Image 1 (spheres, helix red, strand yellow):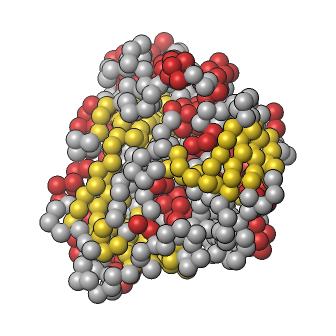
Image 2 (cartoon, rainbow, N blue to C red):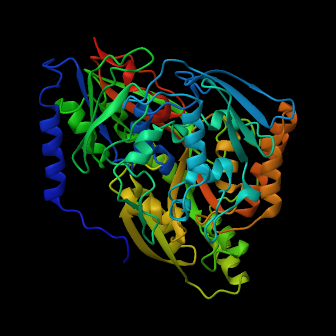
Length: 553
């Protein structure tokens, strides 16, 4: 079985021992008031935000880097960050940004318009290995193409980005090939954090190899030891599997971070993270298992985020027989969504009938195809497709992680496998660790069926529908020009009412075409020691919940 890993008790105890050591001086006894130990659900993949798409990586890189714009604390409204203001041309193709003055990267390099263009030029000119969908995921999903595409990669004809032009030191224009309503919010993502041009060159940001599953093995040290940005914190050290240490950036242009040091430790098991918080070994952790919400009491504080994520079973249509719509429909009827949501989401999940959560405009209120649990219908559809029962399928799920949309992936997998077995399928199970194998394999198009999900990056339906279904991606392996065109039209539309109508139509079309089966709209929880103050939960989670605001009180 490829990409499989064996875990043992010794490894689990070793991680907890490292947590205890890291938290020994920062427990609730108050021995230290300048350090916070935080438990993530996994290690970051890399510390170059342009080459990652997972929350664990973005949580860290959002502290190290700033983008041109950001998001209002606790919400999704776009606010200034490295840009102090912006304007757009009448044809909506040229966005001009006034840049913040007096900002330096943590290596002393000045931030200016040339640095902005250096970063955008780098992304647009990524070498072919970095054009892998598992790496430059957000560049491809937001901007679409590369200047010099490698084999199978999208080129300039597919690109939203045309160029970058500096106007002196503190004004810069980003030039698009077509209008995009979601463009401004999209570049607020940590993925478009501006890095030091000096560091990118000095530490070989683009140097390395990419293996068959899409995992980048850098030979340079930018993404592992020298991520240089302008954010409130900077990297001190990172030992994968043990801890990552951030220290306060004394050159930060904004309000200085209140805590001098943040230590992030990876603990894949949600119950183990809870135990570490209860014992004082850590002072905070994310992705609280909903079934554990009632245990975050006393000297602990639970913050609940609203449902702004979706869990789904992904279907790769490039792996037969998933190219057959009847088979995808059979899968949809085979899944008992209410049973899983009731059993594993602690009352903070809702059964999903479409990809967009109800909080987003574009969620269709009527006309959505329904696929109620019906194993008999599933078998009939498989036979109608000319297949002999049982139909063999390879089904993947991740280990060593919990996400808001799947607090315990193994539980979801086991329930869905039983559903499929009763509905005419024979499941071959596969698992792999979330970092780096599982996510890379999914995004590189290696997996036939897989458990995955999506957490909002910004409050726009383009972040859900256009990012995942607006173009061909190896992850889903389908080509649907009509859907691609509809989503491109919706993103370009500037009239609010027409834009809503287009996205509602797209929501319905996605559920007719079934590139995946959404089963839950999930909220999430994050917990802290009650002495930790200043935390503001937000709907988009770790990409806009800065550690710099935290302090002990």
